Image (cartoon, rainbow, N blue to C red; front, side, top):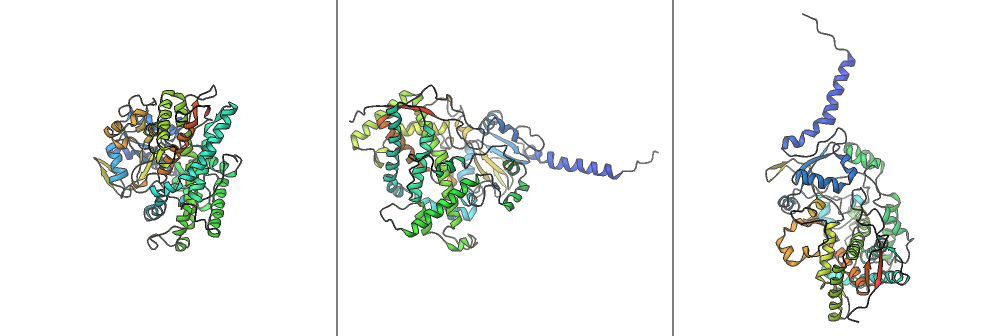
Length: 507
């Protein structure tokens, strides 16, 4: 019998390295095989992350169509269950919110943004959401309408300048400034007038806050090596623009000092006033939500202020610009909006808060734009405990995503989904359709807190514009719209349009 060959330390180490490499790089990819869930084949280290090179929304849609709406994929070694089945979407976002209450915990957001309702968890999220929600009640929004009208008047003045000159203009630039002005006025009681001061640092800060790519080294660490993310937290490093965060933080401090020094009883209550009234200094000193069940800390005030400003610039302004773009491309839809607006003005004499809520076709055009171009491609949740969803066993800690854009572009729900068809949102069509087929603001208790203010901005800006002008395309207009291959649906170019003056029939 041959003697067994002695094992040298080198071979032992090589074998150990091979086993550990398999355990770290390959073994995690067995997760969905064990659960019987299909999905794209991952590669060591990256998982399916390289698929994002074509854009997150495009990656999602390819998988959605190939794997029949429910599938698993990997960001690095992190397993993610994508759920596009509408019955299960309801379970995740509404019926089982006690289990799927929290969003994913991404390191690198920074201390301030991490204190916003977009990032907070459990009792802290409930407490802060309870402070913020009254800001967007029907009564508060009605009180805010004079400020929206003033901002809209400045917006229309800028459109008029372009109309008089016959110049081509970037609609996104104008709507971004308009949205910042609305947010500053209604949420913080600060008049900025970004429309007439385009070099205001507020504009630059909002524009650059989320300007990062999938291949930013910090993003790669957070996504591919979440176990190392604590190092970023320890070093105070985040992948959001530091200058933007610092500017917004200082701006909130300034607004708070102004609120405390000057009592302006003529202005309607805004977010900052409500937040300061609920400010609980115990929370500033590290008391947990289990002890302090009410109020909001100064850091949380700042975090949500940053969220409001950034969301107003990136989300609401995009939708205003893209609705105008869609109307410029579809003049027959614009004609119907104009006829409707003229009729409402003839009835009320003015486009005020009440009148703009009587424009169903304009609202249909806005909704159709949000369907085709939602601000986010996904909704994310984390399972707090093991749960069974229609036979799918989801272990505690697993990330569960809802592919918003993929659902919005599902031809079985929306025939010829690339087409702009506002009639999809008629009362009859909406009543006949599953409500979870349309998710531009999310769903359930963790939907967008500022949704109602955003829709009010959209109605005011577009109705006021169409009262006096018609949107038209020009040779510079980019058709179709292109988006950055990033984590958000960010337009990758200017939205070049022109406006033509029109004579209202109510005049």
